[in-house]
Structures are given as C-alpha cells and as structure tokens.
Length: 369
Image (cartoon, rainbow, N blue to C red; front, top):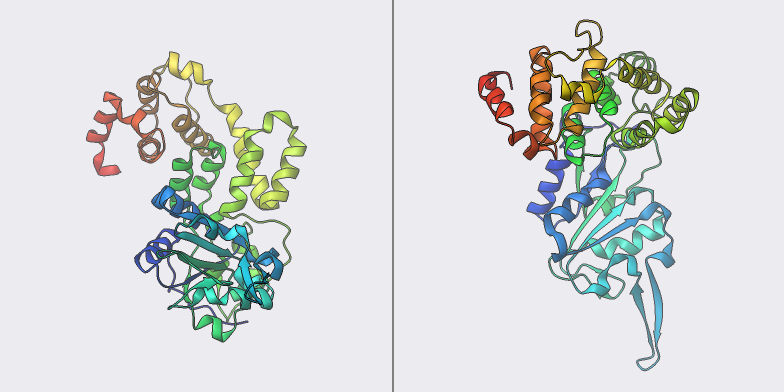
C-alpha cells in the first residue's frame, strides 16, 4: 500500500478556503470514507448563492453518454459534443462543478472530463466553461483500499489536498449549526470523542495495525478488516434520523438499525445514551420549577447530563431560556460551560443572547469558556 504523508492535511473548511483563494486551479480533495468531502458543495452554495450554478456529478456512476453526446451538424457536415444538462452549462452563469468520486470513474469517463482541467480553455465537449467557474474533484485515499486510481497525467493537472476527518469539537459545532441532529447523538459524540478518530492515527509499521485499530478504536473505518458499518460524520447523521424516530420502533429494531448504520460498537454505546433519556426530568418540570426540578446524578450519570444539555440547547426558546439558565446553573460548572458554548454556536444563538441571565453568566464565567 502506498504511504500517506501524515501531518500534511487540512480541514474541510480550510480546503474550501484554498479553492476559493485560487479558483482557476483544479483541486482534488482526498480523504477517508464518510468525512463529508461532498458537503463542500453546500459551503459554496452558501457563499455564492444565486450568482453561480452548481453541478454535482457522481463520476463513479457515470458512463460516456452521461458526460457528452455527439450531435451531427448537417449544415457544416461535422459532429460536435454537447454536454449533459447535469453540468448546468446551459444556464450561462459561472458554475461550480464537483466531480465527486472522480478516482472511481471508468478511465474513458476520466479522459472525457480532462478538458475541464485545462488552464487556457477549460471546456466540456465543445462548450467552454463560463468565466469564473470552479472545478474540483473528490476521492478517497489510496490507503482506504476502495479502488481509487489517478494516473500521472491527471495528477499533474490537479492540486491534491488531503482532507482530515473532523474532530469531535468540529463535528459538534457543525451539528449545532445544522440544527437537525438529534441531541442524543450529539451527547454520544461529546462523551465518546474517539468515534471521530481515524485509522491513520494508528499507523505504525512496527505493530500489527489491524489488531491495534480494532482493539483501541472499534468504532471507526479500518481498511484492514471487513466491516459492514462504522462511525463517520456521514453515518452519524443517518443514525440521528433513526434515533429521532425511536418512538416508532421497538428497542431490538433500534439497535439493529443503528448497528447497520454505525457498526456494532457504536450502536451499543449510542443505545445507552437513548436509555439515559429515561433518567431525565420532564422538560415541563424543568421550566416550571427550575430551582427544584430533579437533576441527574452528575457523578454517576455523565451520559444523562450530556443528553440533557444538548437536548436543552435544541429545545430552548425566548420564553424558556431564563428558567433553563436557572436550572443549568445548578449543574457542575463543566456542564454549564458546555451548555453555553453550544448554545452560542447553534441556530438558537439569538435566543440565548436575548436572555439577560445568560449574558450575566457569560460575564461571570468568561475565563472557563
């Protein structure tokens, strides 16, 4: 297996910033499965809005006819290549083209897409790209063992960026901003930050890597063993969809669905966080009686505390924020800080900042944030 240059990695956010700084270059984002490389397109859409068009091209599932087709120009007695509508060139606006999983595309498809990488006249078929367009590629690492190949003449046309997996803190910040991730899943990641680890963290030629990764981190992707599922940013979002609808299925079905989504180890531990929900006081009691409502055992039920805090961030409103702050202030300082940090990073930020009590807590405890 080829060796990865460890340490020379960027976060997905940094990768997008690099692309935007030098849009005339074609960048290749490579990273292990499920880390969110494809979500870079979402960032571009937020940044550029309607000023550009956006083309997501799943290269691994494309054939030649899905890229461009020859059309006969009878008057000129020639044939021309017309690009598929998926590339959005018909709109006449600059376009951001993401060639997803380019390294898994059949070689003829890769060859047909090569004109997009040219510096002087990037084009697709016979149609030039509108000025100001951006083209970038994604793919997995060679060490992932999932069949990614890139020939030398292609490598020489692109700038490769190795994208690292998000840390637990970065993922939680993303989840808080997204606002749709179940708080139980967020609490699980908060308490088990190792689920955001990488098999590259355990790379050491002097040890049995397969055994070491399985022993030290049973949650994550490991290319050296057979897995049906594992924890990744992508699979955590899908696990959240299951957990959020747990009231519709029995416990056996829940664990089966989670195991098929994030793997056996992650499913068992996440299920425990679902059960912590039963140890929490009712939301109505917290808001009605913030100074007397039951607190989870902060020395024994750390998971329950985590579920409570992340759930509170998602449920708070302008009407409930003040009694909620009164209740949270009865918890250990670390949980107060956890609540304040994630409330400030979430879509509910304005709700939190509307509370005088929340503002006073920030001023008193700025040194712990």
